[in-house]
Image (spheres, rainbow, N blue to C red):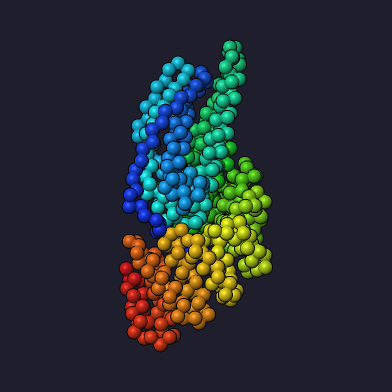
Length: 432
């Protein structure tokens, strides 16, 4: 488990298909919205702008699918489009009870590369927050439409007061959702503290927003994982649990909420509590491989048979995905089942989508061969991993250790010159 989690933290992927022709593309769109007297100009402009964004985003998604559809799945493309777009100044035209908005929606093709450079956990989060974002905006839009229909023929002052109060709630919910969306974009850009601040503003506008508590809780856990000061890390972890507790009370059917809280408990080694949350996440989202992988990691020291079954289930659900095989490969390696481990890492290599992911899996299989004392094959795999990692402008933190492990294999084969060369390279990279 330790080895797998470390790899998940350290991975910095390198896109394997060419982005030499990457370019910023612009998609223009115009949308119109009918509004009522109970809606503020700020809200109606944002609603109209959002309609235009959806139109432009659909065109951008179609374009991305033509270029990257053989590498990226639909949900990944949506996560890129809705988190990486940039808008020029929006042109509005208010006319009576209608508003139109014209936008220029810009997206850089290179974001496909940037997305696949992320850890698997980040990809999982970005996909889920995009799906969540679409859901909460759609629900709010539906409430606004129904309110407008009911309010269309209201004449009496007392009735207008009632509708004004209802619209105020729906509008605040809408503005809260906008804060969440903006926070999501900050998370995509790596601005964790800015994202947390926006999620806090979202909660201020709507204290019943499970999405805001879920997002903020997840990012406090990110801060905890990165924090070297143990008391500060524990404080962040407690804040994460507190937020995710609130999110779960507000939405007991949110699978990702329970996955996120289980992941916090897993990081803190509270395995019993983590298992309970992953059980609930599996109940709500039985086809999500990560729920089984994380639960398996909680069970490694106590219920290895159940852990093995969970790894098998993850492979069953995602049979053409690299990470399910590398996770199970690590498990088999720890169990000294080297033939099964090597087989899984071979499958992980086959389904790797990036050079860096492939390098990690060559390193994993090399480690298996080294433990089997098959030093020749270990050297081949370590050499392939080194070759892939050395292509990177920013070197992966695992690179020096692969040189060291290859050096150990050369040493055991009696090749002192190559062994010393690798040990020397290890020292040079460690000093950088």
